[in-house]
Length: 260
Image 1 (cartoon, rainbow, N blue to C red):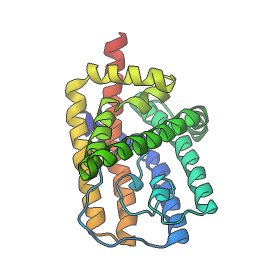
Image 2 (spheres, rainbow, N blue to C red):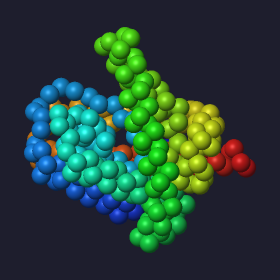
Image 3 (spheres, rainbow, N blue to C red):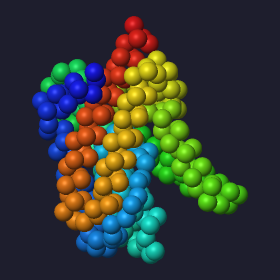
């Protein structure tokens, strides 16, 4: 199975975990310095809408990580300093995203991958991935606002369901942009094609991804505390990197079958 072999692959190439862990720790420490520890233990699950380099900010409701644009949404007052820091961290995340996804690709092909190559692919892909982040953010605001105005509470849930549905349909979008070196528009078309080619292996893995991320999100909120947040950063980076390694294997199968 892809998921089992992915565990072995990540154990052999564990250095890929350094990037999401260090980046999340830095984002957390900056957030703590700006606003302190926010929130208290609660029963809650946040569904992820992101692929690529994992971050606990994707599954945490409380605004604490400055590497996610929701940090600004959840603040009562946003200073210029906060805005500049979050914008800078989003650019850095887009840069790391390209290098991280390409490293998954190199691991799949059992090809040596150096730090200089990581920087090269980060530099080559950051702008497209940054634009994608902004497009998704603006789309979420527009669609959710429209649905909430007309359908109130139900509209909020409908908006979440809509974007989860889109995430599933275009689960390979970031992989396609980085590995196939295409723009966002072409990436949308090709990633949908890859999903259709790999319907059966993709959907069980998508289900596993949401079960795992949902469970980690649940326990993160239930045991919300600084030590547990640090523990979750390491655990989530490891588990999601294994899962995305499995996605990369399926992605390559789709490429082989579609363009053989």
